[in-house]
Amino acid sequence: MRNTMINNLTKSNKKHKKQSELQRVIKQLKKNKIAMLGLYILIVEIILAALAPYISRYGYAEMDLTACFATPSFKHFFGCDDMGRDIFSRVLYGGRYSISIGIIAVLIAVVVGICIGAVAGYFGGQVDNIFMRILDVVQAIPGMLLMIVISAVLGPGFMNTIIALSVSTIPGMARMLRAQMMKERDSEYIEAAKSINCSQFSIIFQHLLPNCISPLIVQATMGVAQTITLAAGLSFIGLGVQPPLPEWGAMLSAARSYIRQSPHLVIFPGLAIAVTVLALNLLGDGLRDALDPKLKN
Amino acid sequence: MLRYIVKRLLWMIPIILGVTILVFTMMIFCPGDPAEIILGSTAMEADLAAKRVELGLDKPYLIRLATYISDVFFHFDLGVSWITNVDIMSTIADRMPRTLILAVVTLVIAFGLGIPLGITAATHQNKWQDHVSMVLALIGVAIPNFWLALLLIILFSVKLGWLPAMGVGTGLAGIQYYILPALANCAGALANSARQTRSAMLDVIRADYITTARSKGVAERQVIIKHALKNALLPIITTMGISFGRMLGGAMIIETIFSLPGMGSYIIGAVNNRDYPIVQGGSIMLAIAFSIAMLLIDLLYAAVDPRIKAQYASSKKRKKVKAVA
Image (cartoon, one colour):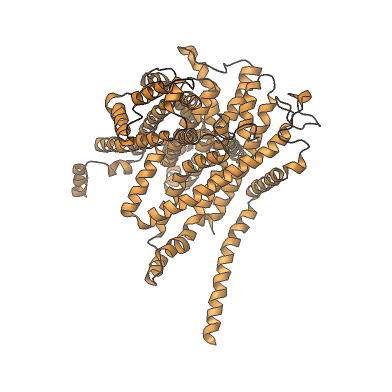
């Protein structure tokens, strides 16, 4: 009877503690008005992109040859491009491509980065050495260049852009997790887990990873921002998402030829990128402050 | 110190070799038949076959790789362009300086403005100077450099007509062609360096030795520059390394926009023309330039922080120090 009571007590205690950690982060984040502003902007953007067909009056490929190069007006909020396509609609639809490329590419990079970083950081020694030397080589190529080479090999397209972006994001993620793992792996709780014969898999993924993940979360948030910019850059030079798909970078690339007559073609897609990246950076800054154990008290 | 430099230089050899193998292997999977790209789609089958033998495409992968490595590292020969038949190494020798000038000018502008901005923000923490510079920094991080480039062209070339939007010039007048590209490329690094400087300065500014310096009556300016900034420099230099890599990458797009004949526009143009030897050789040379820049930054580290320098002092000296201690 007493035993079960104690058991229950420790269980509820444990549960309570676990919740409070997450709650603390959320509470801390909620206090940070600037970070919340970033979060709200992002939510609004994602809703706008998701509901694009219901919000915009025109399709993203719908041409109106009487309205070529139309300047912003009530009929076309952001004006029209060289083929008379409504830029407002295209920016909304473009959000679908740009934001999803950013998120998917970073997710892939995080998963692969965790696997490499965890194995290298936990086992150390020769395994670590091999992985790190490979990363050294990959990182000796500047990120943008690596992406261009990968896109040259794979060819342009939505999925290939994602692959190119995630490959060049992986080394940073893996290194960060490795450093955290090395810091944590000699802790007492890991020794305890080893002494009760936990499997290596569960030590790495159940015990170590949750304690190493917070810098990775911040890095991933900032990473999405950077990836959106890089994806736009790749599309801008014609290697990423291809026109007529309304990716923001591709739109800028097409608008470049008309920069002298119609600068408004250039303004709005770029503004969309800048606002998204700004919002993600604000959120990332807030997350860093909320997750930073140094500022806990 | 010399030992450290030599060690680092030797360490670059396997890295560059690795980069060469990696790039070479990736380029094999490029779409398209090289012989057809060179001779055009109307070429006869016999000519195509002869071209493949000439290029060595009939040999196994390892032999081609070995030939390429020996060409690159022992004969400094990157081959010729498939499209124009021009020697790649000499073209790169022509173009690389422009890319490096752009990167260095960008770096100087970014850190020349970013560090003072960060210091102002840190010394006026939570006052308007701090808020203004951090908002500027946030915007600078968020703006994609190629968009900024287009905006700068609209403003300074199209509307005001002050600066040229494309090309290169010779002599002193040539500088004007680098102004807009450098401005466009530096925003991100400027913002990053300002943010990093601010947080590094805030870390050290409350240290005891700063209080000591102030209580000794050292002028505030001296305290900030000599005592605080000197100790805050390490994380700032780290940012510099990261920024340099991004700048080399970012410069590739910027060069294309401004039609600046550097490495970036060379490689991107080659990708679009499927001129793969240029992509291969250009990537390797850029990786070498990048590695050397990283080495220089590591040396800067040692120059700034005597603790790091001491680590790499020759063992003789270290023994001497120990004996004295």
